[in-house]
Length: 307
Image (cartoon, rainbow, N blue to C red; front, side, top):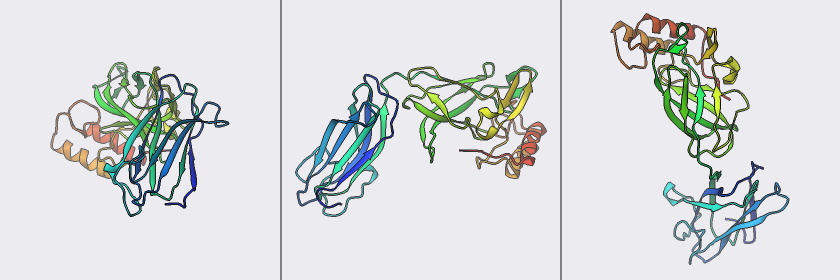
């Protein structure tokens, strides 16, 4: 709570201009104070990078009513639970490239704002992400030994690199690509993060990848080591040149080491067959070939490299 008349401003950075149908979306939580004090929140949009602003919406709340209220009045300083938040969404003028939240205290209660984003009205189009797993890749056929399920995450390019969206798909054994639909991510620049059941987590190159909602995005990890963050891949073919994400990460701790080898050796000793994590080459049989892949990577202290 702040003294009556106190104003606080939260402004976005300049972002790519909006198109018709785009909207502002955010979460907020507010409980009015029991004495009838009125707090307010004004949201303003700018089409000239913040030189001037136009009011988009005004919200207010007190112990009688108000579109700012998300729960009933409280006589104590308000801290919201997960169930006390509401999501608001407002249409933005075309050409908007900056937004400002201006809160004014009437000596009421605490107001919280989170998860601010611009929602692009364009329909999402699947992205094509190309990569291969070290163990699955066959340099004689230039194909993968099997198709498999993978997950691709879109992550913010600024710390702490939050997950913005994700997609799960089948990595094709011939095209070496997965079709990934990012249905909620707005236009922006992101890191791609690859996850496969027995491979090392791998991120796209430094600086991120440009994504425009409604347009096709393609990214090929296989063409050069530096397509991965920290060049954290291994060359698996010379003609054509192909780089692969490392195989042998069984327990998900970010490092290929002795603990992963133990899992593989145990399954190999028990002649385990089928769709299991310890089968690094995708032939549905755990044996010395799988152990050798992981052993080489463990000897080279291979581990995740993140921004």
